[in-house]
Image 1 (spheres, rainbow over the protein chains, first blue to last red):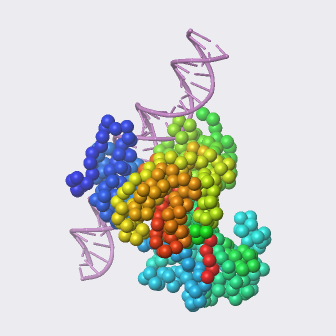
Image 2: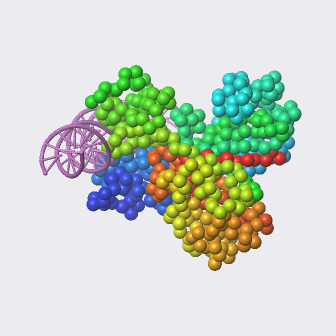
Image 3: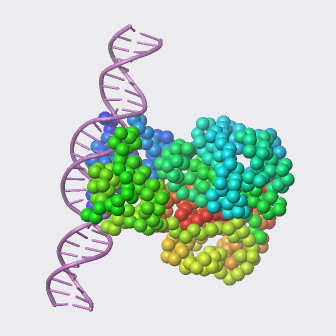
Length: 262
Length: 262
DNA sequence: CTTGCCCACTCGTCTATACGAGTATGCCTC
DNA sequence: GAGGCATACTCGTATAGACGAGTGGGCAAG
């Protein structure tokens, strides 16, 4: 068993009221914050920490679980515990739905990802007709049946976002929108061709911890929240023509918005 | 020891590959989702779960810690484990910085909270001059020294948000902005009086798990992420006149934005 | 009736141990 | 050299027990 690099970690204060596992977590957190363990670096193994601090393994594991739920580290079975690297962040600009971004052939996601040097992918594409949930129905203006378009977005093989678009069936049925691939410019371009000139979008942003199925779909590490975004698109007649419900890995996104001062 | 209400929880599947503590967590989660345990309700005690499932206490605790890190339940020392109630959510509207909201005497936070029937409070007010961090400096356009205004917002005694405003010292020094109470309409009203007519705001939204000091300041339950919002205010000459860095309890907020379609 | 204490119940912390399972390395065999 | 296997090291799961500390209700003393 290799000894710990000296000076990286201190000792416990037995007179402190603070629980031992918290003291250990504090020391590891500080070491990470100060760069003594860099991004992606391996922390000392549980056995090494057990020896160094003279505590039982469960206490050490408790400390590590604290850091894990803070999103600072993640453990890999058989390999060790590592300082979680920050993935490249995707910035959603406030003009991302401007019409000029729709005029080109590819989808916004693809264009932007390639510009950033990433390999974009879309999978789990599924288009079907459904009964609207009460929430979706309310947002679309008391629509009963909707077309639901589900898909998952990946960058360089890593899932970053799932999205479901809901459109009133009377608008979308038997149009290219009901096709898996709606064609250049995406469904917004198709909506405008169908006479629904888009006026503006409303977005609602929430953050929360993921449900188990979201952990799976986005391959989320523990301690990573999700951003839950619900966007409603309105045409120039004031009608809600689409609701898009998206769940994003919070560590892969930053959302940018512009607000008027008057 | 009271027996568990029959039918609320099932039994384990010993043939399953799924770890026992996960199976228990799954059952509890399902019971909560289906409303068999309502908001604020007390879950069976660790001892009861230990008996019911015939496993050791640590295994039960492990299950509960899963639910806790999902934000579903929170434990109270000496009392039990409870289904976490969803606090009333504060909605930040997309027009929240419209000039008309500034014309009145009180701060936006106060007005809005009272309209919603809550008791607003602001504390930890602290105003001082500081060296700008590289990030703040970049956002303000290579400003070296700034005026920092720190404060914490509470609703009905519960902290919901901390905020720090940074203003270039050459704008804010020796003005009402440097006073703890900047007067009616807040610092934005003062900026306009000083000749900095506001043009627009840019906001960046991130979500992440809170650092320990944020847990303390916002009294966050475990499993509750924070929304990290950085807003930059620009005047009509294109100059960045303020950066506001705010951290919000994610379970108390939903942010609303409006995006143009062109 | 009120006060104060005791006690039962609750979760929090910690130890010690055992075995399982994934990973990586190096050696041995072919 | 290539392949496969043994092995050591890693984290994952689970048990059993002990004591501490916060909460709340009931009982006894005043």
